[in-house]
Each structure stands twice: as C-alpha cells, then as structure tokens.
Length: 458
Image (cartoon, rainbow, N blue to C red; front, side, top):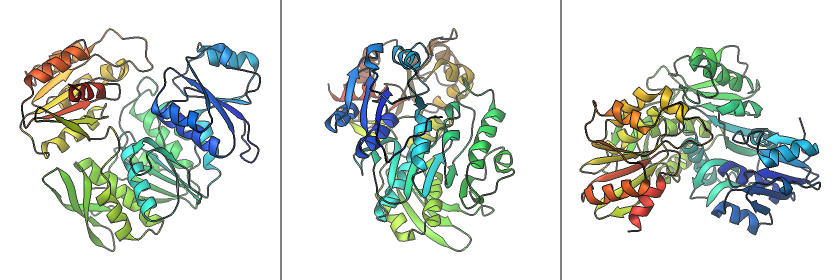
C-alpha cells in the first residue's frame, strides 16, 4: 500500500472530490500544503469551498484529467473499474488509495484517534462527541458524515492529539482505520449488496474492534444481538452502555418536552446525573450516552459535556427543521433503514402535530428488496405515507422491484399510502392535502430533501 509522508506534500487527485467525506480529506491535505485536484459531476458548496482554498476541480470525469504530475489518486467504493479516470490511473501506473485507506493513514498522525461505528447513528453521535470536545476547548480534528453547524461544515482541522471520525462498515472500510478509541452503537443487517448476512456483518465489527490496541478502549452497546461475537479475544478495555443497570452507563426516567426532545438520568456505577437533550427521540438518548462515555474516557468535565448536548440541535438531514408550508411543519431526515425509520417516526410522535405525513424515497434496490416487509411495518406508523421511486445510488440492476412493490406491502397495514413517479406529482399532492398543524417528514438518503425545499419555495 502506498504510504503518504505528511511532511513531504505531493499532488493528490480525488475522483469524486465533492463527496461529504472526500471533500473533508481534501481540505485537510490542502491545509498541510499538498497540491489537491479532483473531479465531480457538478459544482456544489463543498467544491466551491475547496476551489477557494486552491484546489483545481474538473466537472465531469474524463481520462484526460489524469496527468503525469499526479502522485496519488484517491477514490471511493462507488468508483468502478470502468470509470474513465480510474482506468487512466491504472494504465499510467499511478499509485492509489481508497478513501478509507487515506483516512486511516491520517489517523496515524494523532495520539488519540476516535472512530464511531454502527449501522445507525454514526453522524449524530460523532457530532455530539465533536460538540463536547469543542465546548471543552480540546481543539480536535473532526471528520463528520454531515454538516455540523458549530464548524460550518463536515471537517475541522485542529492542533491537538484528538482525531474524531465516523467509521463505516460498508465494504469493510473501517478495517483500514487505526482507532485508539472505538465506539459501536448498534449492528443490524444492512449493505447486503456487500455482506452475506448478519454473521458476516458481526464478524466485520469484530475485526474492527480487534484494531483497538491493548491500551485503547472499546465503547459498545451491550445489547447488540451477537455482542459476544464482537467482544471475543479483545485485548483492549471494554466499556458498555444499554438500557439497564448491568451496563456501565444506562438511562432512567426518560421524558420528552413539548418539542419531543429527550431528558433522562444518566446512571453510572458512581453517579446519577440529569441530562436534557436538544434533539428528539429515544435513539438519541443512547447516542448521547455513547458520547458521554467518550467524554468520561477523555476526562471532560460532566457539566461541560451536559451543556454541549443541551445546546446541540442536530446536524443537517437528521430530523432537521426546514420550515413551514401553509401551516404544515416540514422536517427532513436521512433515515433509510427500517430501524432508522422507526426511530425517526417514534420521535415524530412526541412532536407537536396533527397528522403525520412521511414521504419516503427508498435507497438502493438491494436494501429495498432484502428488507421490504420491515420497511412496510416501519412506515405504516405514519398517518399518511407517500412513496417516491427508489434512489439507485451505486446500483444499476433494479432486481425487478420498484416502489410499487413497497406500496403493495404497506397498503394492508395503512390504506393511506400513495406512490407517484415524479417529485412534481408528490409536491402537488402534498401541497393540496397537507393541513395546518400537520407534520411532514421527507425521508431517505437520496435527494428526497428537494421535495420539502421545493414546497417551501412555492
């Protein structure tokens, strides 16, 4: 594997530089004096930021963008061998690293790299930890899979020994990392276009946990089914959290305020402390507990951590308030797995509203097919469900399924389910039928957010 020397800057080219993670890595390299160039399909606020800092960006991926002056090419798992830039790189013999491999090499430069993993909740928990460390004046370097308002982006370059990053299991990316502190929030079936089954996924998280050295710490949800598989043969310290007193951290007396934001007692072996969160939902109680456990490990004063999480109001696309349309509140959320949908709609139940509308855009054919019945059960909780076409992301084979199949699964559970083949049709339907006092959630990991934003522009 190609090894970067961070004291000798080179020319690095990013295929897909406008991605939320790739753009952040590019920004770090720019700050360290590297020459950075790359490509993306279209201009965005992230690419414009990189250009303002000196990056050369091509819009459109073409073989001629790859020149002999490039020392290293970085790409993501979404890039296939037939990509013209990837093919040109291979033909010219230019060294390459995946996004995860580059991030792993960056982590080596810090004494305390902290990696947050799990099927759900990574971005929110990483953001919570980031808010705590910023409030504690620890000057961390941060890599977040979403836009954090406190830093005005998804990356922050600090000057301490702390490096905080999300750790995604897809394609075993997080096995390229070097964590001193690892967090595992939950483990469920997902990314079944890559993993064989849940046992394969559990073994991947086990390999991630084994990366933590003997003087490091794993913070894990002790209630994960199959946690014993993850925890076998580890040399590091293990800290657990869960719903009962058998774990090192657990909540008691959970309540919700008029906006659905949670409050609870955080209970450890030695203390009981009241916590009020600035975000809604039971799932965020456990995300916050994981963040408190990290803060404890780093000796952050509890009052600092508590104040940080009271002031934390989420990241973009995580139960994000977008605005009002004729008296209807519009929220946007990234949920694209049945468990995430269940958590988001449960949070919405505690939010002030009349009818609850959910506009869902399924994400990838493989996930939709594998979890069809679970999707139907989770979505049927809403008063009204509106389905958009499946967002294919990296996939090209539709496997013979569509959102119409999901519609057929939901109808017996909730007759108020509708499908439209275009965003325009969905927007017209919502504009005509949502009533003052209703709550509308646009939901999915694709571009469904555009529906709510278009409605607000009317």
